[in-house]
Image (tube, rainbow, N blue to C red):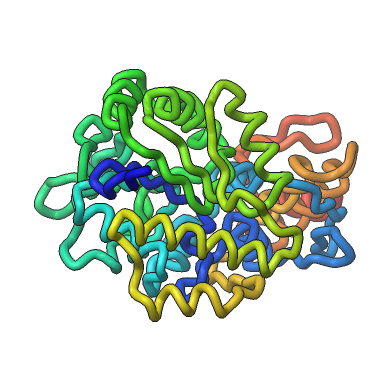
Length: 365
């Protein structure tokens, strides 16, 4: 069978593409933990704890829900998250992506880091979803072209790009909003007849579901590099009408060997398409595993009411009442007037204004 040339590739990269050495960037779960630690919460026996507040468990809390909660309360974390993903050393996957772009193929990604850009010899043509005017550059041009401009040799960054935090989409509201119909039609048209190659992605983005389902149907074939059987079942459940070929064909049960076999299979396909990565980068990715990351961020301490809202959002039933009492007391003691609000209910009365008497009564609760 004649290999598909890279010019007919549509390479889709998820977070796993940037986690591999030497890049070693954090995934969403590690960013989630880093943000919580930076505002004073600590993991203890599977729960997140902060003195004076009820703890909350650590089930599968989506990072985007945490980020959405923090953004609604004005916590300035986007710049720090973007900074953590800005400085990156390109790895073998990024190198392959750069070669695909140079051959005229397309690269789509949910990643906001600059790994692919670093790997490119020339700045690539980039597109993304519509962003507000404040995300424009000094010369008035947009950081990312509209999705309707995406085509061959274009890097599509669906969730924004780290060098401009205002382009980022990583809250629950943003990641649940589907793409515009005209953008989907255009992108599906660019996928027609292509070989879709997916690496490092679990297919769990609600905002991209319709696009991917239609793009898979329009493509010539879908080759999905996923090492773990349980994740493969999740992907099949998410896209039941799509014909997906998972690679490697016989995944190993051992984690390290499975990771290596998946990378080797991906490199072999790239070599067939004449876009094999730099041998040194390939060897580093094959030989060196990536340990879990302890992400450190510098986020200004938020008002105490934010901690209460986290307990309310993620904690057990009725845990919000003691959390709110603690938060109001703390914000009053530290004179965080805005967080108390102009109208606060105290002892059944509506007290207007942030005067000292009001704060003293709140602090005494």
